[in-house]
Image (cartoon, helix red, strand yellow):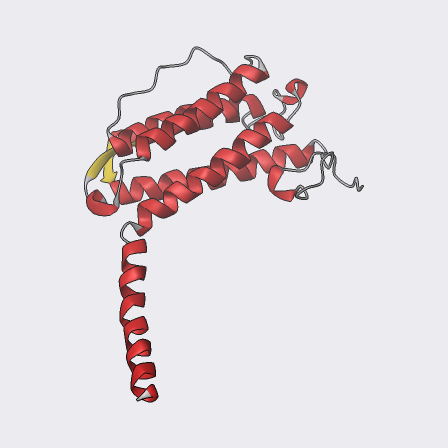
Length: 189
């Protein structure tokens, strides 16, 4: 009889596990992008805060964007792309320029991520095949736009990280957790 109870319990556990996994995976694509959004928000805003104000004009090469241009580009790209994906009302246009004060550029970047968080909140996997506007006045699927958005965050965070390192600073993802003051490369506490 004990063996029958054990077999029954095991069978129930095996039957319930796929149901629980299916419930968690109802929107795997949009859930993954929203998780990337949280990480990008933290890392990219922290990188913008990390770069000294007098280095916002820094360019690794003459053809590169300055750090200020990069921050402004990410902020404007976030609001456009998240609006296209979600159909949300457009975010207000900014009058800021790459040479605007650092605190204003950082605030704009943070606001763009807040806008994306709100705009993408109701987006789920049910319309991944639906067409949305994209750069160059093209139409792409919502899935392609979501993946492009996450790819853009990774691309531009890597730029921020490189700019920081070229100025002797560690990017947020390279700083030791729980080690305040670990800002300069090569410093240890």
